[in-house]
Amino acid sequence: MKLDRLAVTIDACAKTYPDGTKGLLPTSLQIEPGEVLALLGPSGCGKTTLLRIIAGLETADTGGRIFFGDQDVTYRPVQDRRIGMVFQHYALFPQMTVVENIGYGLKISRTNDQERSKIVGELIDLVRLNGLEKKRPSELSGGQRQRVALARAVAVSPRVLLLDEPLTALDAKLKESVRDELAELLRRLHITTIHVTHDQQEAMAIADRLAVMRTGQIVQVGDAEQLYRAPQHAFVASFLGRVNRIERSLTDTAQSAITIGGVKLACPAYLGDKILLRPEDICLDRENRSEMKGVILQRNFLGDRVHLRVQVADQPVLLVDVQSDCPAMVGNEVALIINPEKMMSGKEVV
Amino acid sequence: MLFARQKNSTRKSKPSYVLFLLTTIVTIFMLVPMLLSITAGLVNSYSKGLSSGLTSKWLEQVWAGYGATVGWSLAIAVSCVIGNLLIGLPCAYGLARTRSSWARSFEELLTLPVAIPGLATGLALILSYGQFRDFRQSFLFILVGHMVFTLPFMVRGLSAALQRRELIALEEAASTLGANFMQRLLGILIPAILPAIIASSLMVVTLSIGEFNLTWMLHTPMTRTLPVGLADSYASMRIEVGSAYTLVFFIVVLPLLWTLQAVGNLMQKKHET
Image (cartoon, rainbow over all chains, first blue to last red; front, top):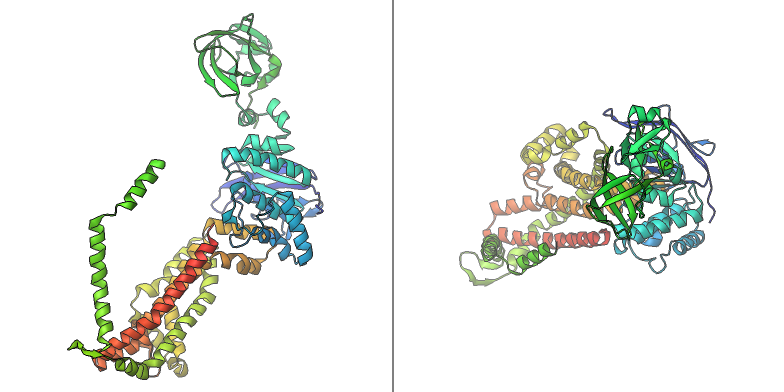
């Protein structure tokens, strides 16, 4: 089965609904051929609207343009865009069997029976649905339905694959295994994919790059590690994981320093007066040599990790993420070690 | 959840005797007139009751005099379903996919023939189209009346089914796979709303076969349906003949309704997700 690999270019696409609501502010984005890009953001941020505009299920406001490779598809109806789409609740045709669902697009494109059976057979092997060919969607589990939906979307050799929250309908445990399977499958297919999700772990596990969205616009685009370690926006930092929000005085900022727990640490002035620090970037000094002291107010055992809430001087209570063998208990005084290089700017850029 | 389920199952296993008694009384109250009416058509003399002996002569007399009304009633009911599907399906689709407020107002207008007495609708049709003599004197005139009266039931039923979010998603999924409107309509939408189509058709058949007010206004001596014939027999013949006619009505209608209901259930089962 041969799949095209095209770049997708979104040029100044916006969406205003008839009642005047701005669903999407003018947005431009380039997705490379074969790349998996995640549109990540909270509910109502415009990620699904953007995906639906790319699909052709919504029309962008005048002036917006969508290109598949060099081809301008802005005014092409959805059925002529040659896309594959997996919907949030899969939208499998209830009256059709697994084979009929997967082969539907091929039947529409009048692919001959022999070729259709061959492609459907290959896809059934690929998504491991062997033995379920004659089952109807109501007889399948959530994970199996998800795989049928993916196979159906891929069967038509789409130029672009669009995934609209494809794991939302699954329970937490199944979600993790299906997520890894999906990531592996997308790597194998190597097809240009746009994946919408509000789950940062899902986005990080599946996508090559993430575009984090908020209130109808893209805030930052980059790979998961870059966004996690060097967010340009406090929203990106907090959306991708837990952060401590700490502040410093104008004097400290002028001196390129920050005071935490009575200890002055070097901290570049360009980071501003609001600083972000991830819980896992604060360590406990087991030898108690560090002068930065704090008292444990709360201890949450999470199985593989322990979360501590530590009261320190000069700053709000800090969340500290340590290994599960940490013996420190509520009320204990602990010594903290912070690597200033891990500090991130808490500026609201947008 | 488990507790709720146990509670439910307990409730199921111990039915309320008061409710059971009430249901039984209501059922008997409803069945007695039907049974009396039916048996009156099978006895030699209603006043003497069963002691006068059973007979099929009244049934034969009804069939000889009004047999044709059965066929016409069925033909009108089936035509009414077909016509309503042809008009109602596009109309329901349009209403279901239109977000504007005029669609809601139109939907309200559509239900007017249900709210207005059938006699008034019949009079309006006669005043408007009565001068077209051939049309006026044909069963087509009655069919049009029945369609005006039953179309709202078809449109409402189908529109509600087509407005379901999952159906919109199914249609969108088909369009992403390259299906054009007709392919989506015939291959996806109609099979997906088949249970609603069957249910609405059942409603239309039921209403059409039993419709009297409007039909009484529209009929001519040559264009009588089952209920009109029934009224005629009640008015001009012995009570046994009228009762035998009721029996004919039951014999014709019940198997039809049961069959349609069974088909509807089968479809529901096949299409459940």
